[in-house]
Structure formats: structure tokens, C-alpha cells
Image (cartoon, rainbow, N blue to C red; front, side, top):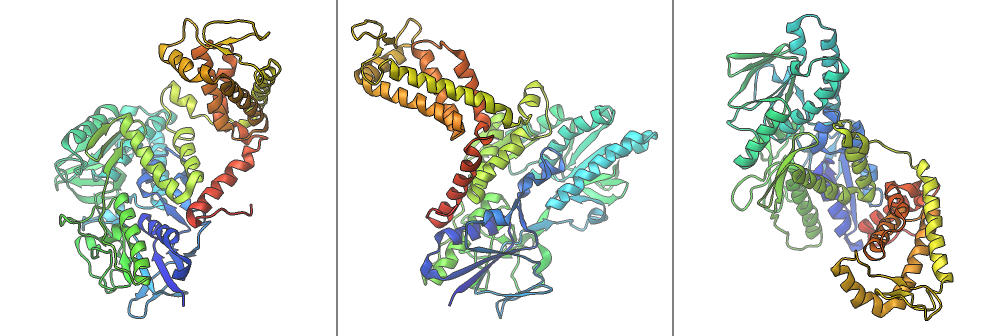
Length: 581
């Protein structure tokens, strides 16, 4: 009889658990895998500030579950579970019941308001896709109202934006908001100095998980570059619809408080028989099990104690580690094997302050500025590739680099403009024709019959002109390569050159593997530049536009690239190719 495994919650831990089960299961395991969530999509919680601050399009932080599990045996159920009967192994919603043999709880966390009067009623949270959209619309509305408000006091309150909490989410939110405020002030003809951005932290420093030098860099960037007031040792003690109280004495007039000051385990299941600890997170053992042997908890919902007796922090990497362990241990339990202890190895933390600066600590290596920002993008790409393959990589790059809305400076404004690939069709075909003709001319000149490559000497004993590979401008290291490897194998190298040039011609003309062809074309021209000199700059320069997806317009790449991407994901999930298109 098949064992039914239900994963409740499609957060980072739940997704990882489902994919782990899919990839490591065997036919003999006889499993049925279900993932249940109230939404049809997975939310990239760490990037919500980018939507709230209008940097990227709204769909840039969601990934539909059907796309993640398209080539798997994971069954997707959209429902909201209201009750769990642990004794009889049943999940209950308002309309349905779901029987399980093993259960993984990954329902995440939610904001904690700590009993601050008025906080829950009058603040905005940033903990879901709908939260991000609500903040975005509200900020836009505040600028609209301020542009029409004649009263200076009321106008100031509209243009005062406060972020409560100096952790990762709050700091990234205020950084994102600063860039958007520049654009909104210009659009609504408002002086940028009239816009106040404030981050309020109850502790003596923001980003306490980071080292002091990185914190100092972050504060300097916020204050000096982004015009953000950083208030530490400042507790929010009361909130109303017209402002907030600090340390029970100071009052900030504002209609916008974004609260990111605390989280706790999702409370929707707290009334059931689950042992809880700090922040109401569910206690689990070293195998990620609750006190029920067939019930596991992962991610922010679980309280996992590490070897050094500290709670595992609520980070994405921690959720992935616990999710992976829970998935593997359910398979071990079904097979009657010993369970595997979870030994999470966190590689580091990083935080971005807008789209042009970040700080990070990766395995003890401290980074700031562009290198840290690049590392953050690489981490995001690694995660997205794991759950969605090349399709999600393309979507992320499009949103983050080509389609982002916060454009500052001439360079960024131009490189983020999306260009229709249709207009690259003509240059692509002509470039292909030129490469094809170059290869055919070499065949007619005898490149497949006689040795045509030479060092510095040129003779005509074969009746054909030789091509010197070393000239006065050739670097010594390249001349050594020519003398050591190329000239002793002249006929082989000539054949390769002819084949590559004809191949490039056909690739560009048909629009097949255009990106790779462009890289090879650029490499060939650099090679010519180092040896004989770059005689035709047109070849070199026209290859670069081909990197922008030129084969997708009236080319085979339009069909081939999506097909190969789907095959890759199918192979990763099923260890075989999908023969049918």
C-alpha cells in the first residue's frame, strides 16, 4: 500500500522537502507526495521589498507551484487547513479532509506585534505577496496626496515613511524605498529633501547579526547616500493612524509605518497538540521530528537546536537544510533505515540596501558594495535554478537587470532597456552569411588540402598565400602557444577553423544556439586580433548583440531553448529524458 506524505506549506522548507522526496525516492518506496498551500504560488520572501519598493514587476517574487513541480510526481493542492487530527493522521479544511502517513509542517512564520498598542491595527507588515502590493499602493497614494496638500504639516506627515525594525527585512525595505522616493519626488514635483525616511530599532544597532564594521558601512550608506535617519535605542511604544510614539515620549507624525520588528511561528495551528518554544516555534529533535514520530517541522515554523545549543536562525538556508533533512528522514523511516541527524551548515548572510549596495559575510569573508551585491544575486540564482531550472534563471535576470525600474545614471538607464529581438534578425542573418562565406573561401583556397598557417615567414611553394600567425604586435605568450601547439598541428587546426566558421554561419542564419555561437564568434575574433590583427572589426562588434537572444526571433532557438530547459528539469527530477515533446 502506498505511503502518503503531505507537506503543509509551500515555503522554502516545504519546497525543499518535496523536491528532496522526489529526487531521492525509488520505485520500490511506493510513495504519494502532496504539497498543500492556500496559495497557488511560492513566494520569495527575501525579495518582497523589491516589489514593495517598486523596483521590479509584481510577479517577480512569486513562482507558481505548477511550474516548480511540472516534471515531478508531487501533487499540488490549494486549500487552507484549519485543523489537524494527529491521532488519526487527518488534515481538515472547511470542505475537505486529507489522510496522511507522514506529515511535514512548513507553514512558516508571521509578524509579532509584542502587544504594542495600535501596532497591529495601524502598521503595514511585509510578510506576504499581498503585503508587498499593499505597501506599494499606499506609498504611491501618499505621494499623490502630498502633491495636492497645501498644509505644510499634513504634507510632511504624508511624506514621512517609517520602518520599524532594523533587521534584514527592515533595512532592505528602507533602502529600496529611498530609490523609489527619488523617482516619486521628481514625478510629483516634490522636493526630495521634504521626504523623510526613518528606520527605528529598539536595540543599540541595526543588523545585529552582522559584524560591527559591516554595520558601520551599512549605517553610513543609509545616512549619507540614501538620506535615511537611523534611530537606535528607540522603542516604538504606541501607534495610531497619525503617527507613532518613541520611548514613551517622542512623537513622529506619519501615516506610514512598515513593521518588520519581529516574527513568530505561524499561529494558525498553535491550538493543537504541538510542543512550542521560543517565538512559539514548534520544538523538533535532531531529526527535525516533533514529538509525533510521523510528523516533522521545518523552516521558520520549527525550533531546531544546533550542536552549540543555539536556536537555528530563521534564514532561508536554515529552512532549506531542515527541509532536506525531513524529506530524507521520511524516506529512511519508510525503508526501515536509521534516521539522519540534521547538521545545518550556514554559509553566511547578506543584506542589500537598494539595488547598488550590499554587505555580506560569506564563511568569514566580509564583502561590501558591488561584490556583496553580486554574491546576493548568485545565491538567489542558485536557489531558483534548484527549484525551476533555466526558466527561473531567465525570469530573474530579466526582472533584476533588464526590467528593473530604479534606473540611475546614463549607463543603467540604457542597459535596462528591453530591446525587441526582431530587429536583430537582419544583422544575425548577415553575420551568419559572412561567417559562412569566410569558411567556404578557405575551403576554395585549399585549407583542407595544404598547410596554410605559418609563423612569421611566408612562402609560396604551395601556390597559395600562407597566413602568418605571429606579427610585431603578437604577445609573447600567444607566440609561444602558436609555436608549441598550433603550427605543429597546422592541418588539424585549419580543419577546425573551417568547421567552426561554417558552423557559426549556419548557427546564426538558422538562429540555433545563438548565444553560444556569439561567444565563439567573439573568441575567434580575439584570436585573430592576437595573431594576424583584427582586420574586420565588424565581425567582432556585431557578435555582441547576438548575446541578447537574437535566435528567438524567427530562429530555431525560439523552440529549442525552452525545450532544452524543460528537458533539463525533467532529467534532474526523474533521472531520464522526456522523449515526447
